[in-house]
Image 1 (spheres, rainbow, N blue to C red):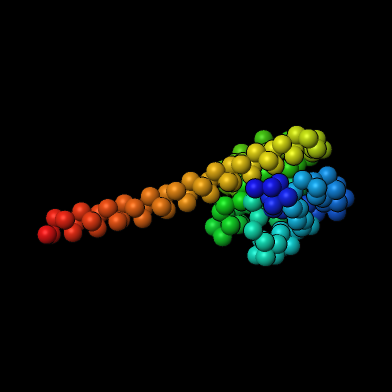
Image 2 (cartoon, rainbow, N blue to C red):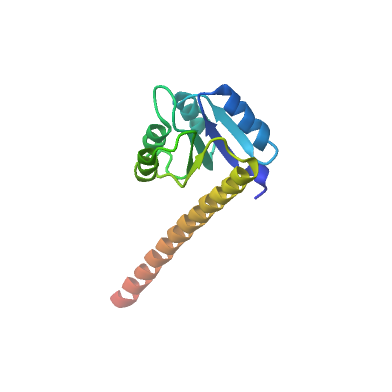
Amino acid sequence: MDKQDINILYVDDEVHNLNAFKASFRRCFNVFTADSAADALAVLKEESIHVIVTDQRMPVMTGIEFLESIIEKYPDPIRILLTGYSDINAVIDAINKGQVYLYITKPWQDDELRLNLERAYEVFSLRKQNKELNEKLTVVNQQLEFMLRQKLLS
């Protein structure tokens, strides 16, 4: 898959951060931005998002709360938490509650973040392939069980 086909959603209440992210990565990825959890949900409903990057400290809902709230409906996107604060409790909550793949501190380094976004997509892709292979394996097992039952009955 071409990197331009990788859909990244960045959620941050600070518009200048959204603009900086989009400016930095729009040539590498298909970037969607949202300035609130509500706007992010609207994007998730319309687009197939592979990686979600969210700021931790936002009004109304923190990044962790947002990620936790979407797990059931949108379990597949890889989650990255981005914050200017190094709060160990936030890191622990992010991993435990929000199923966060990576925790990055602000300000980000473009090259490092781009590499981490590419790696996150690789994880997304491998999980998707694994899921598809497991589904195929289940079908083959069901067919084999059926054939075995037919053989035992004849």
